[in-house]
Image 1 (cartoon, rainbow, N blue to C red):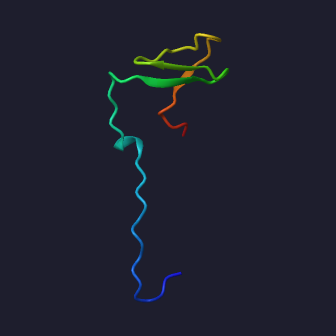
Image 2 (spheres, helix red, strand yellow):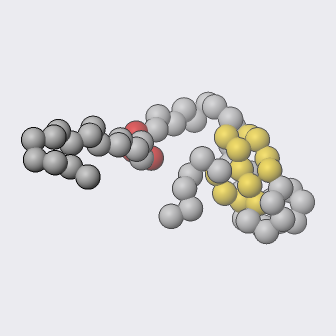
Image 3 (cartoon, rainbow, N blue to C red):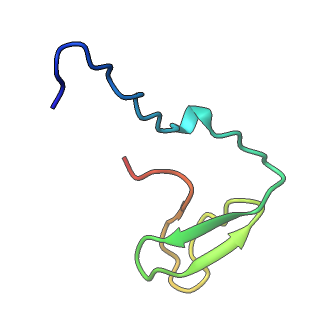
Length: 63
């Protein structure tokens, strides 16, 4: 509760994907949408080595 004359707290700053510097030479973690297999690779694996389903980069939000 704020009373007249009080100052407001500092706003919370949440980093977005635009704030994250991606280095293509770094390894990323990828996860299978179907079976949950996790692969660490410098390049996108495309499909899961276990079941063939699509994989996602875990550092990318699912929005």
